[in-house]
Image 1 (cartoon, rainbow, N blue to C red):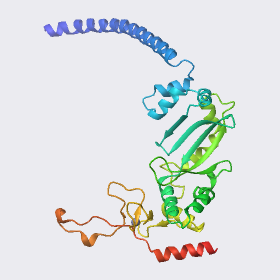
Image 2 (image 1 turned 180 degrees about the horizontal axis):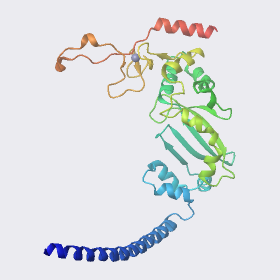
Image 3 (image 1 turned 135 degrees about the vertical axis):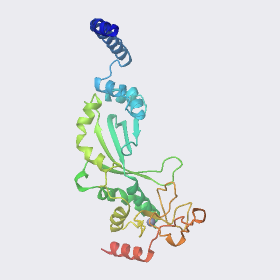
Image 4 (image 1 turned 90 degrees about the vertical axis):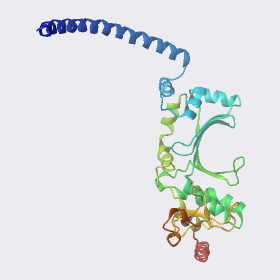
Amino acid sequence: MRSGQAGPEWTGMRESEQVTRKKNSGSRDKKLVRQRAAVESRRQAQEYAGVPADIVKLLESPNILPEWAKFYRAYPTVTAAVEAAHRGETAEVFSSEHEHFLLRVITLDGDPVVEVLLYVPHGTRDALWSGLLHSADRQDTLKRLPVVLPQLLPEDVRFEEVDSVVEAPGPGAQLPRFAYRYRVPAAGLDTWKALWDATRQYMPLQEAVGWYDTRAAENEEAVEILRRHGIPAVSCGACGHAVTNRHPAWPGTWVDFDPDEYGPRCPAWDDSALTAEDDLDNLAIGGPHQVDEAVLSASLTMASNE
Ligand SMILES: [Zn+2]
């Protein structure tokens, strides 16, 4: 009875009180939200003076990659990067999130230029390295590679204004890097958005060398193309990886160039005969890649006679 009487009355009070409170807290919340927004926009205005809105949005995003955050903070516009290049600064960003991508602003004959290098995917690189290591005359092969590099791309992304580049080995490295490069005059480009708009036609090329695209020739397919051009790249007859037996650390053993946690062994190696029933006795340790050297030298001779 007591609860029955008190219930509705109490509930009613609470309800009306809640409504009032809601109203009050609603307007108080709105006021707080407005105040916070004002503080936030003052902070952004101070922190990002002169930075285009789209770059501010990127820099404020939790998803921005650290290398791009660093680059955009240093050079929020193309103009800022050009000014830095004129000062002798290296305005560049390298990212390997989607593909090996390098953008830099340089001066060529005094004119500012935005240069983008798209490095070949790992499987393409491995075939090129194999071809180079097995060449009798490496210097001659190095000279010929820029001509062959476009052949490793799908036809629809081969542009005349894209250069094929063979870069000298980086510090501590022994083999060169391979990339596709395009350059755009920076004059007239102020914002990064203007640059992306001006270079939209290269997006398919960028995608083709990306980690999730399979259209660029890699490993076995790239080896075949290189051999057709007389460059003696080698692939494993079992797994198709580009391989070499001239690896400085593994002379005489066929290994690939991209060792995973199991080492540069052949994933197609048949070690079933070595497998014991007990894990402790298991000899399933894999083996080297398998190359029929007679077949390979024959196919290359045929290719160079064509
Ligand atoms: Zn193999």
